[in-house]
Image (tube, rainbow, N blue to C red; front, side, top):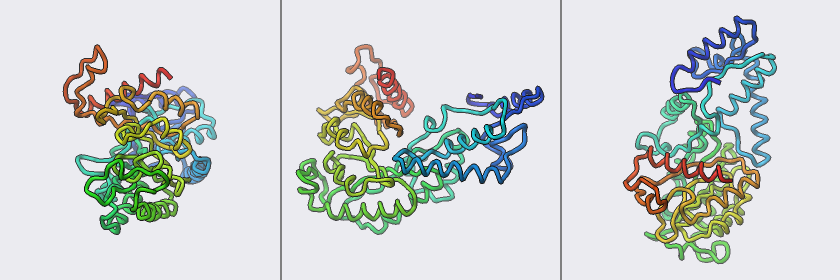
Length: 371
C-alpha cells in the first residue's frame, strides 16, 4: 500500500517495476490515469483488456445489485473499482500487488451539499463531471448528494421543484452515488411549530399530510424508475419532524429506494426522544448524521456532549450489524462552549470549518473507541 499526500504514483511505479524485474508477477492499481481508464489496473505493466474490464464490471454490478436487494448500501464507485481490480489480480495469479490508497472507499466518502459557495444541485451536468474528477484525483467518492429536495413549503409551486429533483437524480448518476438526501416539506404557515407538526395518529393534526404524501410519492416513483435511493432526513419544522411522522412516511414508501437518515441533533431540537425514535425507525435507517444537541436550547454540540443519546444508539447500531455511513455534520462554526462541557477544554471561540470538523471527528472517534 502506497499512502501519502504527494508522490504516490511515482513511488508505485518504482516499486512495481523493481518487483517485476525481480521476477514477481506484479499487479498495479493507480489513479488518476493519463491516456485510458484501463491504466488503473495493470499486471506486469500491461493494462487490463477491454474485454476483461467489461466482463468484470458486469460481475461487480451484479454483486452491487444483490446488495441492494438484501437491504445493504450500494458500493461506491471507488469500492466497485477496487473490488474489480482485486478480482482481476486474483484471476491473473499475481504474486504481489502495489496500490495507491487513502483510508479507502467509504472512509474517503463525502456527503456533498455545496461546492465553492453554491449548492451542488445548482451545477450543470458538465460542471458536476469536473467536480467528480477533482474528487477522484484526491481519492474521494460521494456517499450521498446532500440535496435541498423537499425543503420548500407545501404551498410553493411544485413543478419547478420536481424538475430540480430530476436534475439531482442525474447528478447522482454522474457522481456514482445512488443516495440522495431529502426532506418532507415545510407547512403552509410562515413558521411551523412542533405542536402543528405533531401527530397523534398518522397525520391526524396535519391537514396538509395528503399533499406531502402525494409529492413524496412522485419522488419515490421516479427514484425507483431511475435506480436511486432517497434518504429522508428528520428535521424540525418539516412534516417528518418527529419519529411518528417519519414512521408514517416510511411505512408508505420505505423499501429498496426509500430509506431513512437518522439525525440525532434534529430530533433533539424537535423535542423528540432519540431512543424512542431509533427503536421506531431502525428497520429503515441507512444513513447516520453524527451531530448532537442540547435539549434546553437546541444548540449543536460535539457527539456525546448533548441529549441525543449518541453513544447508546451507535452501540445499538453496532450490535445490529449496521453497515451504512456515519456522516459528520458538525454545525459547530459558532460553538463557543467547549470549555464548559469539559474541564480542560481549550476552545472558547468561534471555530473555523477545519476546527469544527476536527472537533466533531475527535468526539466521534472517542465514542467509537469506547464501544
